[in-house]
Image 1 (cartoon, rainbow, N blue to C red):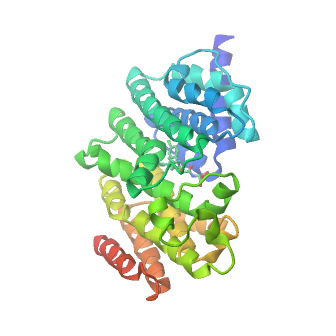
Image 2: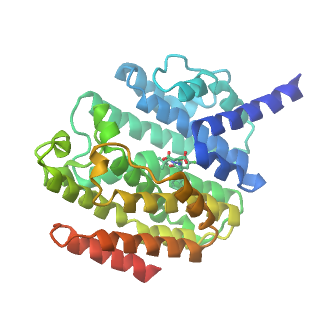
Image 3: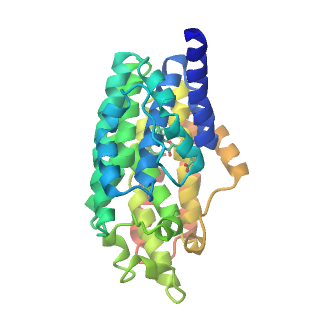
Length: 348
Ligand SMILES: CC(C)(C)CN1C(=O)[C@@H](CC(=O)N[C@@H](CC(=O)O)C(=O)O)O[C@H](c2cccc3ccccc23)c2cc(Cl)ccc21
């Protein structure tokens, strides 16, 4: 009986992984044996946290303790959560969360320690911002707030992954130990998602674009998408791109320090997707009409181009040149964008 339940709980975890994240699940399953289960569980635990944070049907009184206590919850055998409302596939993960917990508690202590530590920091960070959103104040005012929020929801994931890579013994390079560049890996991905998801987020009454940026182009974030403000909207988008591009050279340094092939591809694929998405978003008014995504065919081509640092550098060089071509001298960010693109091309 026990053996059967072991097989089914681990299998069930991978079913959730494939259910909750399309293309990325394959990348995780491609990791070396030592890290595959660890990263799969880390991903599912973070997905559980994210589902609770994103659930607009949960009152702040319910949500706050759940987020702050999640690092303990992942040790409570049998725990499940049935009140989560909106996203069906994510909801099912929480209904059967005890499966993730069972597998998590089987991990080597050194991995449990890393994941617990990150969960505690992410949970508290999310709870801090959830309160702001509940109080309906714009939680993200300054560029510092922007980097802090992204640190909580994505930068810490980079730091956690780096600690898992080092704990596994598959990576030892000092450069990856530098928390600032591991943090930067996450900030880049999250800022691209935030820039891309403008319409979806404001339709849910959430806004993650920092006031320090949008207030230079409109008196409120919702106004940006109104007819007649096209030029301001496009230039605001450039300012978001400029803020996001600043992480690229650190990320290239991080990827250049990786030695394990499966870890390299695991880290490189989301980065090349992100730069391709960012280039597509640049000066693209569709951001204010729908969620702009790169085509499936482009995704597959990019995955093939993520095998080593030379290929990744070539991809970054290509999309940086695409951005330079679209750059417009009338845009107040024109010069700064060309400078940061120059720095990226220099690195490559
Ligand atoms: C918020 C986020 C960027 C951290 C989410 N995040 C990622 O975006 C995934 C990619 C992903 O989920 N893609 C989605 C597409 C999409 O959702 O837009 C897919 O289905 O293909 O990658 C990241 C991720 C992968 C590799 C290295 C990383 C280093 C620092 C931070 C995050 C890192 C991720 C790794 C883990 Cl373990 C957990 C979450 C993530």
